[in-house]
Every structure is written in structure tokens, then in C-alpha cells.
Length: 273
Image 1 (cartoon, rainbow, N blue to C red):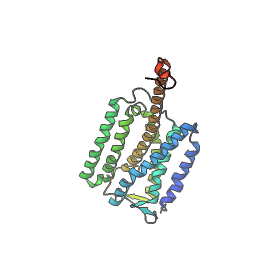
Image 2 (spheres, rainbow, N blue to C red; image 1 turned 90 degrees about the horizontal axis):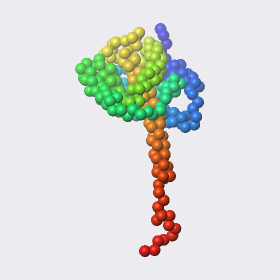
Image 3 (cartoon, rainbow, N blue to C red; image 1 turned 30 degrees about the vertical axis):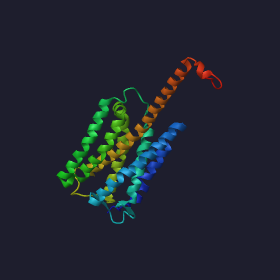
Image 4 (cartoon, one colour; image 1 turned 90 degrees about the vertical axis):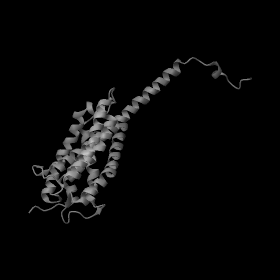
């Protein structure tokens, strides 16, 4: 019988070594870019905790998945400590993978075009009722439908902000999403095979690829996608702001240099009536 890893042992074996390796391989940017990259990852980690905790807690309490006896030592809101660690570890791994693969956050004319933004918002918003409808239709869609409804608002927000940029850079963010997702699929399948965590047969579709439930595959793609898009849009917005500020400063400088002198403004001291 294959021994079961505890959740903390799972991280010691599969995620923390990868995290350390990616940190070592991460590009050494100049000061401004390095600070922006670090701040972006920190913000995404905070968002991951705030947005994921209620959803994961609900799924665990509903019985969508559980953990082997002895695999979990500490819980809060029904969520194991190892799961909380996963929120940060997965986000940072996705962030490091993104920076190692490389991306250009440069703002270009057309990045605010409405068609791409409107389409992304429409799809993201539509995912919410679609996911909830699946959940209401059959208990086996709890995880699958709940996941779709959970991801929808984030995608709508991201595409509403930078849909034009995302539409012109699909290869970049798709690659940065899928590369770490494949690794998580492999280690997740190992953990399921060892019994560290178990998915409910009644609350999942039962569809699997090489033994990995499709819900888990979709989860890792979705979590990575939201992280990657959040990080690239964070730096893209900062680049747009830099260019807007520089343009405003240039215009102000030109106006100041070309302005005609005002005799009254050149007067020194009070002017008698």
C-alpha cells in the first residue's frame, strides 16, 4: 500500500522545492521593475486569500472533497493549513513562471479597444449564472459549476480593464498559465493516488483524464490564469500610467516654453490702484 503524505509533507516534497528553484531562476530586473514585480505578486497573494477562502471553505463543508485521516493537523474555517499555504505557494509559483518565461507589459494604442473588453466581460458575467445553473441542475456539478461561477467575475473584471492587451498577447498568458498547471496536474494526481485528499464521487462529474478529475484540471488552469492575467495587467496599467504622466509632463513643458510673457505677472511688489 502506498503511504499517505500529510499535506505539509506534500508541500515539502512537491511545491516548496519548485518554489525555491524558480526563485533562483527568476530574472534579476533593474530596481523599478523588480519592485513592481514583487508588489504585483504580493497583491495577488492577498487577493488569493481574500477571494479563495470563502469558496474553498464552502466546498469543503459541502463535501466536495476531503482529506485522509492524519493528513491534516490544523484547520480554520474548515480549511487545512496546507490548503492556506497552497493559496500563496501556487500564486508565487505562477508568478515566477510568468517572469521566467517573460512578458512585455508595454501599453500600446488599441489596448483599450472596446470590442475585446466587452466580449471578455460578457463571457465572464455569463459564467456566473451558467455555473450556478449547473450546480442547481445536478449535485454532481457542485465542484464543476461552482468553479465556473467563482472564476467568472474575476475574468470579467480583468478583461474589462485590459481586454485589448490580453487579446493581442494570448500566446504569452496562455503559456504562462499552462506550464505550471501541467506540473500541478501531475503532483495533484500523485496526491490523489496516495489518498492525501479525496474528491466526492457524488459531487463531481466523474470525468477524469489519466485518473485526474476534470474539476481539478480546470481548477489549476483557472487559478493560474487569474494570477497570470492579474500580474501582467498590474504592470501593464503601471506602464500606461507612466506614459500618460510623461505625455502630460511633456505637454505642460511645451506650453510653458511657448507661452507669451505676461507683464502683469512679471511685476515685482504691489501694484498701486
